[in-house]
Length: 248
Image 1 (cartoon, rainbow, N blue to C red):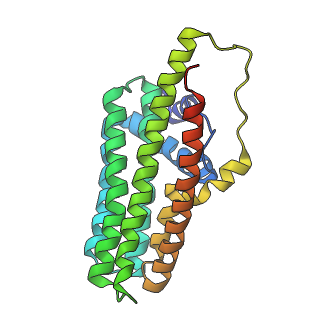
Image 2: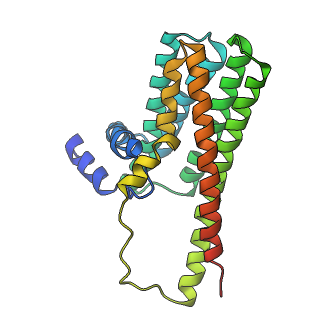
Image 3: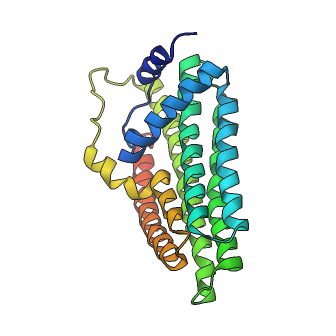
């Protein structure tokens, strides 16, 4: 087992492409995950165990949102736990690539934890609104449900786009080999900045406002609108890309 510095260098070499990744994930979450992956490697943890550590931090934070009266202290604790859980969510894949111990079971477990996270985070906000919020109107209770719908559809549609795209690309490659001279598309910094509002790590920042219920509701509502607009843009983009992959 190499030194921590050696492990970090190997992890950097096994890093996924930055294409389609926001600045937060590229410069904050992935480096934090790299540090955690190095620590997990030194501790002898498996990628699946790291995924479960991520789930423990995330789900504990969401349970606190639902069960504990909002305060500045709770907001700080919730944000810290969510941020750490998100970093461990990056660490499991990095550890898998470093050790070669990744597989369909690990990818499946990671997606299950992510799906549960997206469902529970908005359910926890809904419960908090109902239990502790002095809402201007009961209509505010619909906001977490709408946000949850946008988040889950984006997640599921993105996974389907990836899997169906791979299947279509494989079929096309078997029929006509791809041009080996085609260079990969460059990483767009403008796109990395534009994706910031849709990044889960940026979304977690809103929980720092739990001590000011009105400010939290306003910030949460703005993010809900932004994510809904991103969903519409993503669905349009993915549909066009898949239609372009039709045979013939």
